Image 1: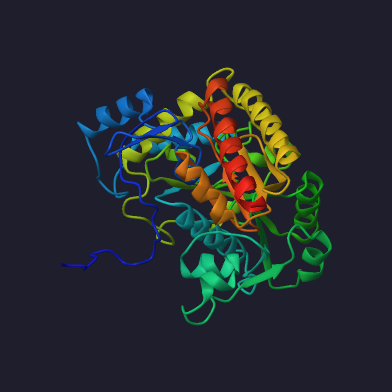
Image 2: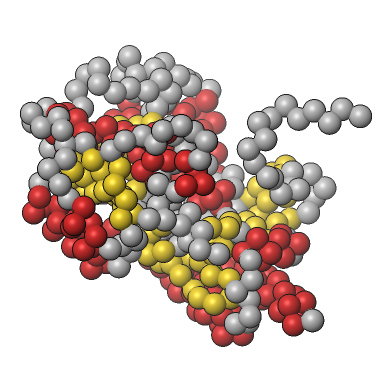
Length: 396
């Protein structure tokens, strides 16, 4: 028997082969249905096979896929215009992934000081528990030992301080500091919400020292919290922001957004991408915005989130031997577990519900933003069934 596996052995995949998806449901090759409350790790924000996205992609696919950024791409200009109109930003650079969006943000911040005659200002302050991607620079920014191990010297220029610790951040500022980089809500780190006051204090700290504030909204952005971007809840704006995941609703697309001033060092020739902002990605990105910016969409997300949160609090009360705490904002929810989170993920999988593990022994509950009240209730019901089984076996 040939046991050869042609793929790199970098994933421990669940025994699920999906054939098709529709809304919040995935159907495997045997025809079984799974309730998808992982959304492909916060990517499929509009669910699976959303008709408006399918139509946009299909229509574009019949016309043009790729030309490169050597030529005008009208879809890029349109999507950038709309993103700028809906946010703090004046400029956008399109990439293919979150890690690339963060790389662009880092380069944008360093170039900003370089063109001002301060090339020594390269250091970026980051926070414990962060996850910014898997490239050599972004694992250095995230600073987690498990992602750094075995990849040679850590890329210089990143100074890490404890989670959401404003005094530690203040103490870390030196004459070589360029920027502060933070996720308003840590996803991989365990659905840890940075207090709104801390975000406001970080903005003030950056203003005081002439630093750039960078938000990583790759996971928490694009409607996930009931606002288009999570930082809006705190009433602060960054100078630079990375977006990806839900931005393409399942099609690979990333973006680095910046103010005119922050982007001033990014001139022709200093940064580039072959596929970034290709016509297919732009068609889908624009279709995602059509849905998310429609009247009432984000308000509905907030309403559904309230239902979810109430249900999750009920589970913590009912099964304290399984769940210890509810975390998150909007439809970016987390349950901290009393048992190993992998056990809880497995029990839910057996009950045909998909969720995503995270740091701090948390399970991430990330339903598509289009989930109905009935589907939210179904999710709570499956969580309850799994918790009941775990609680009984734990007691036994």
